[in-house]
Length: 307
Image 1 (cartoon, rainbow, N blue to C red):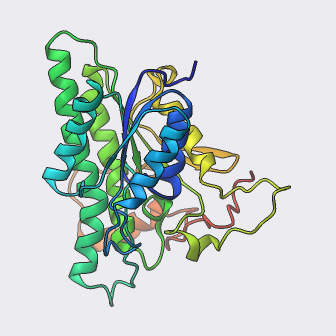
Image 2 (cartoon, rainbow, N blue to C red):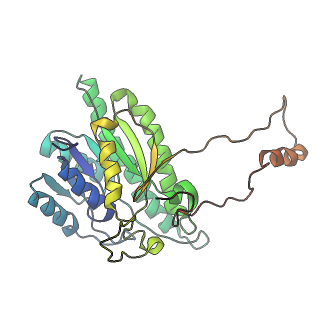
């Protein structure tokens, strides 16, 4: 008996990297999986339907259920057809894993509108469209008196949670996904749906520039192997995580972190309005004991946290 026995999951961007490991683990844990992947290059160019088809054959070869979906989930038609495929094929939908993404890295002064729009569209709008379709289904299910226990796991990134030079488009989308996760969690809690996000640390096509290529060291624990990320996602997709929603986790190798977003850390107040001349002293008070220049911790070396 697997922890996801009988469940139906749709996983976007599942043909390679983290999405592939998620799909394989879900299948081993008993889920039937809709494998979505356009088979595009890292920048979103081109397409190859064989990427999704190959993984589907691998999963079926292991005796599990899988079907390929190769439409663009950042378009309404593609998002709708993905959810419909799961329902038409297996008659139910239990889990959505939003994972599809592309990169168009560029310093802000060199970034084109097209590079901005493409990344925001695939990541943020893609998450929105798939989530909307799934939530419409679960809301209708709840209204019909059927218990809904949907699970949504979104993919954020420390590029958005902490910041990364050259990734204003990608980071903005990933920070948006974290906020989107919390808001949808509030909206869908009454219907029995949980919504969480992960910020994975793993070596994939999109992160090779940051982490480098894999080395052949079978005797050592590879902290950047994408299969480690899939374990947390599988847990959040299961029944034992029904009490967790609106949360953002960092997962890298043997390290799991719980992230907390924006919150007030200092305050100054008076009984009336401030003047411009007063504001310098007021703001200085806010920064007592704190740096005035933002300098995020390294997410590559993990200097603050040891695996």
